[in-house]
Length: 266
Image (tube, rainbow, N blue to C red; front, side, top):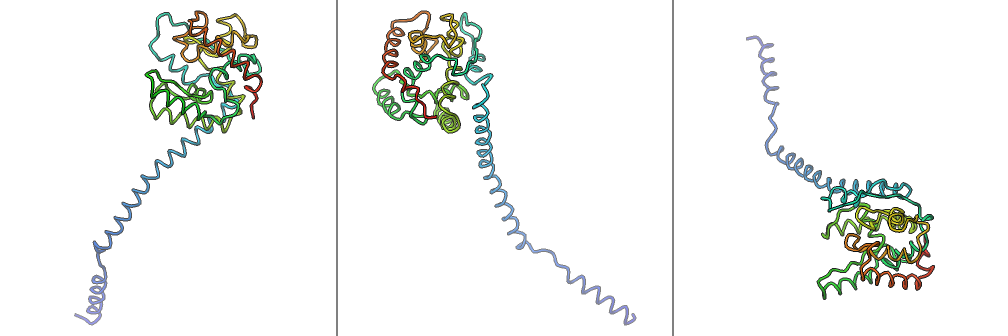
């Protein structure tokens, strides 16, 4: 063998010996790093979903500040529920707050939420009083403000679970932060149910009194507000003793509140 061939062979052998396979000890830290990275990625998804939820709900609430909702959760629930006997067709007609009589506006505040003009979505004194009363009697007493009821009717399902109450509280905060009080009251009076499938003051005024919402009197408004706790049990056109008694109480509260009941800060 020539010296040239020998050098070439040695050189080739040297190159072969220089090629080393990656050790397993070097690959293990990389695998652990990849595993940690994947776990971190999984933890990010709940954060991303929460951010998306907040962004979407804020956008929807901002849109509904200026756009009247064509449909809302409570009306959808009624449409999907098993029909009661002789359930009337759904009725509704939207009217702006300026076309709803002041007595009708005041009656809702007097009946449902007398601190509406001053609170920020929750009446804490009423909530504490309701908790104390509910501990002493079987019949559950509510303490929802007009803002809470507007949030529930607009976005939520009928349930008494803590989850639903938590989501209701979230939307209540959004409404109070992003809407003026006038808009909250306007939406509430236009979507609240005054009878089976009878939504809003305009449809209710025409149905019960043959009057538009702008012409509803104080006595008529008090009678309509008296059935709001349960319009399937209580009736404006067939008032029980309870409805008549509650109507008189609402009229007294309306006189006591006067203009201050509708003196909104925004």
